[in-house]
Length: 421
Ligand code: NAD
Image 1 (spheres, rainbow, N blue to C red):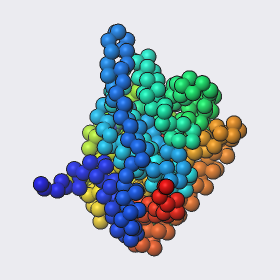
Image 2: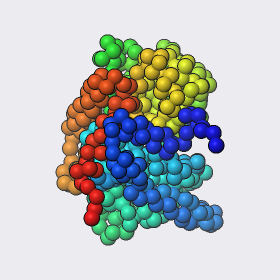
Image 3: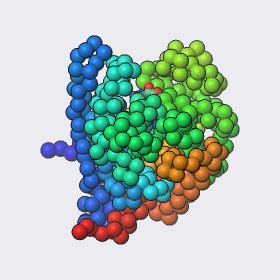
Image 4: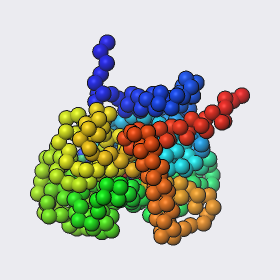
């Protein structure tokens, strides 16, 4: 059997390869490696949902718990038509490393339902979410596993999940999910947190490279929760020029800089950037190779590949999305002097403020937004410095450094806890 080229690796094969490489570099014992490559629990649920026309359709969902050695599981819920347990498992493993990189006391988890949200009405989506939550209710909880939003889920989804779980347990349990509306135990600043975190580490990286955000050009792929807020914060707070953006429906460029607040209003109204009159349409492949200083992939995985990596002109790639760069593309970008700020560092702002939200829910004591943002900046900046120092010390790229940092932190915890009984 021939070995598939790295670009063709499945997400789980990619995640396991990263773990194997880190284990070798860290001289990890085979026992610890085996403990870290396993998943504590992989739950598959198949459940019926009544559609608006009276028919019943079956859906498949997952909740995967990778490792709880440093705390309860934490990870998003993704709705996607091509979702697989392989992808969900890889994302759960990356969540474990991510929480360790930013040093918050959670383990890794992830979940989702295989469905196309564009084909479901709001009431169908609510019934699907509630039934999925019911199916996974025995394994989630504030001390066990805490879901959050991810692709195609949002704070409304989290409100339905919190309500369903609360009905299941007979008491209102705010801390069972994060990313909720602020009036239901959500945290100020959570919606913007992932994007804000991406820009905090981008700024630190620019400082190291002698670059300045003001006037720099940024390209953003994905215009959902992460991409839209990244565009708004880059434009409004960092004075950057957003020269191209794209979503699943269209890509647009304006070398003079897009009027981002107007685009955000337009996209919120229409559900897409398609048809916006303040920029010119370009192809999705042109988007990633548009001339710019910073590229923020904030859509989905495996977007920067061996095919387009040689043509990327950005000096910094700050990964808002999870797994947007394939290992082969990583090598090409490194050889071309592009600094890649890896997902498990760059997009950890979301899980960090999720952690703050969970702490606030457990204490029933809520923080003002300035406090959330200050604490977020503290966590992201110190994580960036730890990863940067490790990369300098080990003469490696930032992804290797972040992965080693995350994995060695978990390995240490796993070894200290020992094997039960
Ligand atoms: P979202 O559903 O709100 O937005 C996704 C955006 O990407 C949409 O604009 C969609 O049209 C676009 N998109 C999807 N496929 C695309 C494609 N092939 N090409 C171009 N655009 C495409 O999702 P989100 O919450 O913003 O998440 C985006 C990414 O960030 C995901 O990889 C997610 O795992 C990651 N992430 C999200 C958070 C969070 O807090 N929401 C935290 C960490 C990481």
